[in-house]
Length: 83
Image (tube, rainbow, N blue to C red; front, side, top):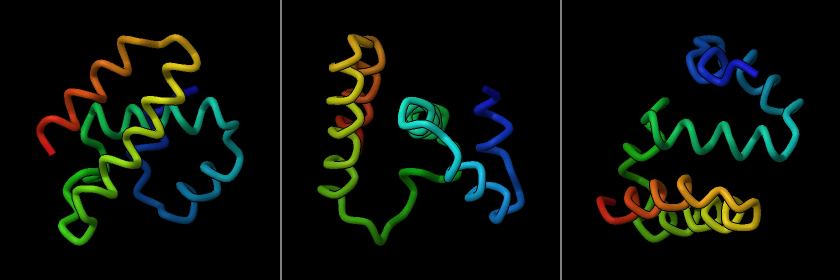
């Protein structure tokens, strides 16, 4: 799966259509990459409270812990530290 192609889509309709077809595994991976690569301004939104951002990242951490992808968990925890 080409996650960069999805994240760099300039057509919002195409982007959301692609999201609707992803499995949960691919969706979580896409979210992870958006955060790690700072795609689409995932953390730049000033209207979303810090606590909500952390809550969302913790959901990803739990997902990757359950799938024993601990390096991803570590990187996500580092993002929380700088929010």
